[in-house]
Amino acid sequence: VRITDLLCDKFKKTTQIDSIVMRRAATILATKHKKSVVRIPTVCSQILFSSSSTTHVQLLPDGFSNGKGTSRSLATRRRRSRSMGGTVGNPLGGADHVYEDERNVKAPNAVLDQNLFLAAAEAFLDKVEVAIKPMQECNDVFVITRVSKGHPTTEANGGRLTIDLKPGDGSYILQVDEDDKTLKFSSPMSGNYTYVLGSKTHEFVGMDDGHILEGMIVRGLIQQCNGMPKF
Image (tube, rainbow, N blue to C red):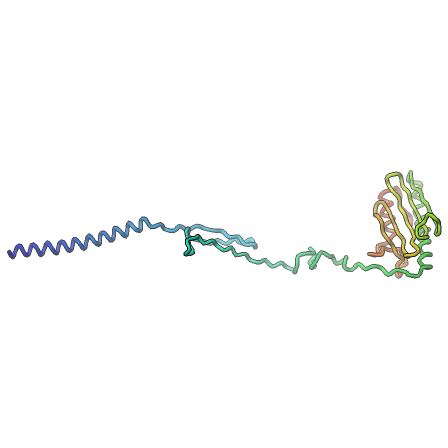
């Protein structure tokens, strides 16, 4: 009986040990099995480009969730670039598209005395007529017509000088406007301009920007005709 009891106690202890070993083994196997089936998040790269052309790389695990079952998207941050020299506009550094030489342009002060203006206008027409006279010899068609003040065909009772070129080339017209105290110039190259007698230079200059009438006449004629005016 004693031997039997000893054998039974040994069997129980062995069984308990085996049970503990089996439980530990099962736990280890379960843990290994769980690790084998759990998805390990992989890392993907998302490249964000900023407006300043600097590349930033940010890493996010795939399947990263915000807790609501939806995938979180990366917020793109852009850097604000500062422009040197203020507002972009004038390539020379100004704040708008108006250049310095345009800001400095001023309308000329005109002579308001009518008698002085009329005398200067008649003298200018005489000067132009003499200067262009030699050009008739080197051009097939170069007709000069001078109409005096008060002629029925003139406008605003002012004198007029006309240069008619060959058909298709047009005409150059200088017309004195006595009422407005202006000298109107029309040409196929430049179009229509209005001139006043400058109070400082006593030359006929553009009423808007002050350019000289003589230069406009010369520029147009040398582009269309042979020779040039002899002012």
